[in-house]
Image 1 (cartoon, rainbow, N blue to C red):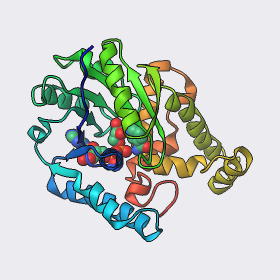
Image 2 (image 1 turned 90 degrees about the horizontal axis):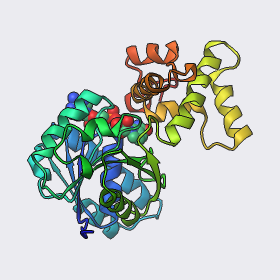
Image 3 (image 1 turned 90 degrees about the vertical axis):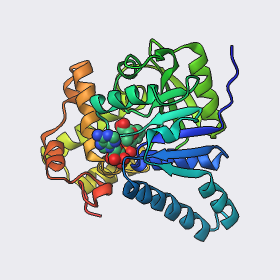
Image 4 (image 1 turned 180 degrees about the vertical axis):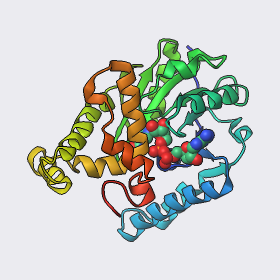
Length: 285
Ligand SMILES: NC(=O)c1ccc[n+]([C@@H]2O[C@H](COP(=O)([O-])OP(=O)(O)OC[C@H]3O[C@@H](n4cnc5c(N)ncnc54)[C@H](O)[C@@H]3O)[C@@H](O)[C@H]2O)c1
């Protein structure tokens, strides 16, 4: 088996997850190159990373030299060609298969032949992305959790096309950045979301039925199950548009009513209330 060293990580996207993946990679001493379509969104992502690090400095959890070292490991680009030298490229754009496939087609002809191409998709089929490239054996899922800077888990998703070498390289990368990897086949929702989303969707069903208030459902699941946050706070954190896409994919895959997105979720997304990122979702922030 060839031995590949991961020194640099390209991240495509500038949303919550892309910024988090860039930060954890940079913190581990890797060079992180963040690519978005506009300089404005790159600036917003850098601002998100910098203010998070500054908060840690204020709390005494990080010194300024370490903050500066992390930030100096992150560069940005608006061109996919800016990722040409990266050893691993992780796609983390909107949860939409056609958008991701187009990106994979372009990345395949832009990044170096030995580079690993990964997706941070929450539920979409990884093989559907692998098959549009000329290197399906070098494609896998590297699925982080939100916030990526805090949560230790990463799901390493194995599409049927991936080589053993690819899974080994992805696992080594996950270890390098100090995360805990678990292995899962390329089935909708992988492990966590396949189990989590029926619960979140049924919490909305319970709210729609008027069984209890949103606040009381959240309080109940925190106090009764020792969960760190209730289902509505979690849906707002994940993003309601992302949650809707996840449920739609799960429903299309399993045809189970527990996955059929609830009307209240569709209404909130239609109204542009996408959760914390738009300052309003189930709650107002
Ligand atoms: N939010 C979560 O809790 C979470 C957790 C794990 C994985 N994910 C996955 O990570 C990915 C990104 O999610 P996020 O929460 O960071 O989303 P987000 O809404 O914060 O960011 C989406 C990003 O996609 C970009 N984008 C939108 N349309 C695009 C297009 N047509 N072409 C290229 N880029 C486009 C946006 O500019 C933005 O940078 C998704 O696949 C999602 O399923 C999300």
